[in-house]
Image 1: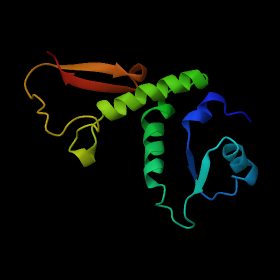
Image 2: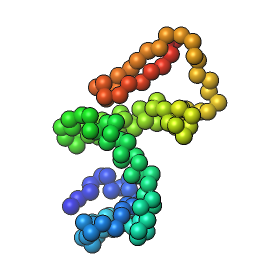
Image 3: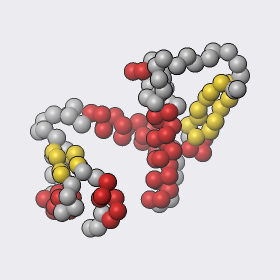
Length: 129
């Protein structure tokens, strides 16, 4: 297996201890200089942030679209990541996206405009200027 150009941007691979990950699997990554780290045994919450992200991106994005190939998948995921970080409300941040400063005051007056994201699988709303 050749990881190609993508391996240069990776430093770590965090994985669980599932039996499907063999020594050969780890060897592929270590041969590219990537450190393979296993989650602690019997600790289901050790990878909870990644699990939550995967559940969210599947429910809101990939399960709603027909993905044609790797290039299309990368395009869809890039668009979703931008939506997730810049526009999607997060309860833990009082309905503000991660990239928005908490000190910014959102106007409550004016017309609301909708922008379709991911071919209509999601929508973004903002005040018209």
